[in-house]
Length: 421
Image (cartoon, rainbow, N blue to C red; front, side, top):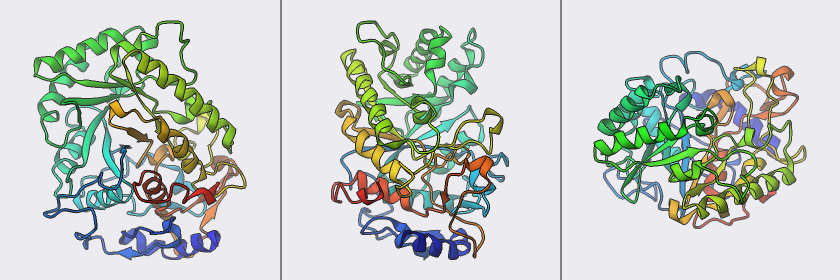
């Protein structure tokens, strides 16, 4: 049945690329219930909308579901850098085609998908003032008529902004710019009135011995413009620190998280299996306990899979299947991760769960719908093997949106997708 449903998705893919997908399954995976709706015909009467496009993105959940979002797609899909799905045989692509994030209709469809999956927070990649990511976040996403109560927090791309560990002038000017252009916006995310900034791979700053200087610089500049910034560090990685030793980064951050679930899990190859996922979240629980003991909050994360071989083949990173085991179904890894991660949310950090990612297609961590490019193609493939490692890649439609929506719902059966395992 699952293969038949995937085949039907493939037959309709040429139409889906031109028309937006806007149907939510009431019983589970939208692979079994996909329909096509014209992109200009947004559904303004859905159940969690309270008039005048003031959509409520969090009404169906007790969590704050956050997703890393990449607004870097312009006239060429991220500068034609490539991504796994386009290189598959037969090829796949985003359901909206290789889109442009400055297109308001694209963002409108993304916002529909956010509501479908209970995403109430975007952590948007930010590479500096007046870069494409900055312009699309400020001018398109944050000013969109459908934004409702959707919150935005910047994901400060530390490796692209603090390149010289001896020079904090870029970090200083960046914080001045962010203060002036983001922190006072009504949709900018705040915890206890404090604007939130998520910092990428801060563990590198720590290893280079400049974490303290970077954090103090950014806090000082934010204070000068009247803000007590809430900093979330990407500091949780692999084994938790020794509980009998001081872990200094806990002192500098208000909360910590782990962006790279794949790397932190040891870059597993093929099917990770239940035991490895159990061990990973057991270690995450230790991180949580130690952080909270030091008055630092903790934010769990999940990611549906990983494959960067179309963009970094020379690194030879092993691909990670989106299936938990060889006998599991598409999406089973994501569903099982969510079951393990959600009990770890921190009430004093707004019960945030972070998803890596909504649309990072280059590392194939996206949950954004994927469809076939060609009408009569097979619905899944293992080719080319040098990119897939022999793993099966399916054009999964809205499956991951529905998994996330079900896992975080106030109302749906908590075991609704257990059949995937």
